[in-house]
Length: 502
Image (cartoon, rainbow, N blue to C red):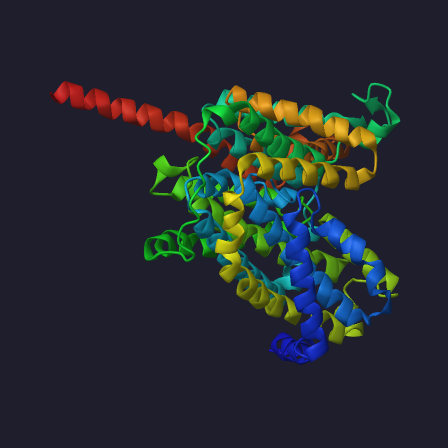
């Protein structure tokens, strides 16, 4: 009840005209910036940090929250329409959203994503209000073996359900893990796969990898096949979801937060893992398995809802522990310190107006985001009517600008082209792109957690499974790996029994 009273006080702060203005500005700026490939919410908040020096803290953080959610949705927009994720959390949206757009259902994909963001953000923020102290205390008890187990589950999940075969999924994952090795060893400082280049010592940024594999690879693939296509404009389609679409997606919208919020609250990589796991879950539960890979709307609704709920979950660790679990949270932590405020267990007591005003503004931001983007879905979808040579020329331009903005190095553009050629080759030989991106994002973290776990156990492999949480996760991994084999044996046994009866 105390939390509810505090939230009501937060609404009285968030709903003042000036704070409503900052929330609207944040949502608009975040969506506009998120649409640009390679410029995600973390960079948006970082770029706008100096602009807020003259603002009082509450207004500044309300605007930051709007930028965060707006940029996440903006990244999903280009991911769905152009197969060009604006940030790593939007990668999964391209898997089913882009085929929907190509078949003339881009507006429906965007509407499913917008409602998914709204549902996930609302449920995630409600959980933030109710469970923040409890989730934070649980997160403290999770150790290196548990983190490694979670990442192994993510690796197995994406390689087992994507692509024409598990072998191709594994090959794609190995490509991503190899790219993730580039740079300095995090524990010994030794250079790996840098070829003597100092610029590669920091590794290859995941934004460059995602933009290269998706945007550049897609543009090169389209250019290679442009003369073979008819070049006809893709229809935009109806602007709203039909009854059948809602019937297929409402459960996905509700399941997404159950996966996204816990992963956002623990330091396990932000929204990437829950969006991947949500995609896998929806594919397993779907009754329309023949549509997957061709535009299954559940594959957009579930991951987008999980991504938005994960964003709310990241605020749990940041506000209650001062522990940033994503790049955006790290930038926002720097912003807190800029104002002389230290997030942690005492923040709710020392700065109640700021904290509860920020949490209340998340609800306001979700409503503004839905009101802004749901009517604009057909407008965004009309991007597909731009002639393809001009469209992909624009994609290449913004992809190059986004990649260059990451580090300001000309070498980043060379790396972008090389990774784009790798993406083109993966499309040519039927390798799914998503496992490679998963490998780049989670590979370095998985290696670090593996080595920490082995150090704690003095090199004993048993140290990887010495907690109930890790044992549970590995049991799930075993089920994911063994289930297709068991299903084949059951089907084969049934077939043999039918033959004998005949």
